Amino acid sequence: MKKIVCVAIVGKGNNPLFIQDFSSSITDENKLKLHYIVHCSLDIIEDKPGSNKKLPSDMYLGLLYPTEDYKVYGYLTNTKIKFIIVVLDTSDIKDSDLKLFFKRLQTLFINTTSNPFYKPNSKVESKKFLQEVTNLVPSL
Image (tube, rainbow, N blue to C red; front, top):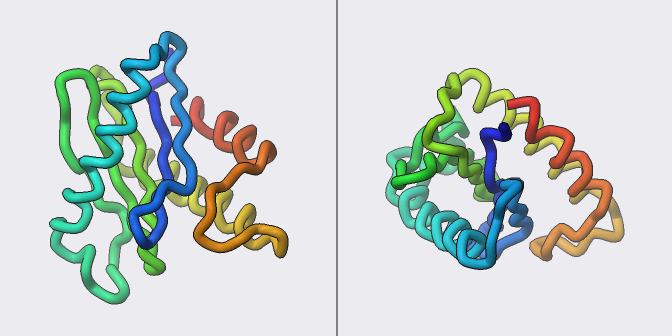
């Protein structure tokens, strides 16, 4: 059973760059709920101490908040790109594993956005990126 149900990357202006659901039994209602959870986590990221510093010493923000069914974790880059993952509440995941996952996800994002044909601050629609993220999700 997959622990991660959603991966989101949000731009500097809080615009969604990438949102993908990984739950096997996702309905339209659950999909909307996950998008809402990701959106709500943006407020928490802005309120986190250290997220307004120019260069945070640790980009991993940890647990942003739990819901009834999920836990939401965040990661903030020095360019204010936000990485958010939503995991099942029953999942017991170590912070070290989450940090490693976020670093790998950031590396995939950097490799994809370094493409000269990528328009900065636009949605990531690369099939290769989606496939690499899909391959990365079971590693957690």
